[in-house]
Image (cartoon, rainbow, N blue to C red; front, side, top):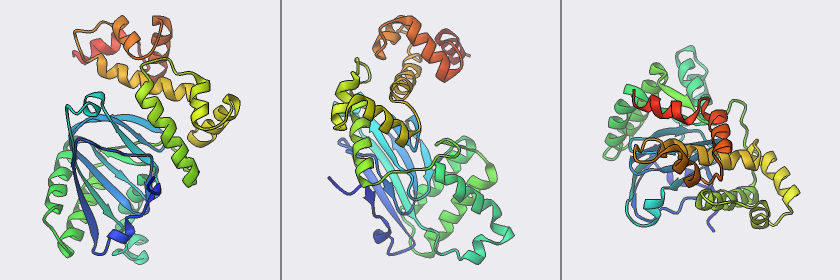
Length: 286
């Protein structure tokens, strides 16, 4: 397996490195970089983990992440069956063209704050999202000083607009070594592939080569959440997607998400979404 600290600084022979991805066989894994990353999904959808945040990505999803923030993208089921593709642009950069004098000056206070917030990962939204996407597309043809100018324009657009939301929880701090990241990646992939079925604790613990009690303690120490909470968060996120389909009633969605009774489904849905499924579905129609 490739090293899970993915070294992109070696690629930054210029000011930054732009990677275009177009594939029907994305094999992402839980990993982190030693440079900033700006990731734009032009086409595709699936589940995304950034630090301890679990979310879904779709067309035009735009994320800024600081170095050493563990993350991974897991494509939807139709993608895994070869019915769709992932089309993305990923920009790696390290602002070493800005000196400490620059970053510590009052003029750069907002930029300094944004780069600090990016340690949790930020999702760019609203009108700023559209503006930043246009700039990212320009980076495919830019070189040298032109690339630096565009990256600075992108960062300025983000921090002046405040149209972004933090992903990982406040106070999140990664405490992974290489072995941890590989082990957590195997656990995540197993859950992503099996969350619609019953997941036995003994089975998932065996993947980590641990006893069930030791696994529960380990998982919580690394992710800051219990394993059952993690699985329920994945299931409820999937339920939110299914609730957009008018052809499915709530009981059907309940069982498709891996729950075996409505009471447990409704309880978990309210815990994570702060409303019951019927209210959420009604809100979608407003």
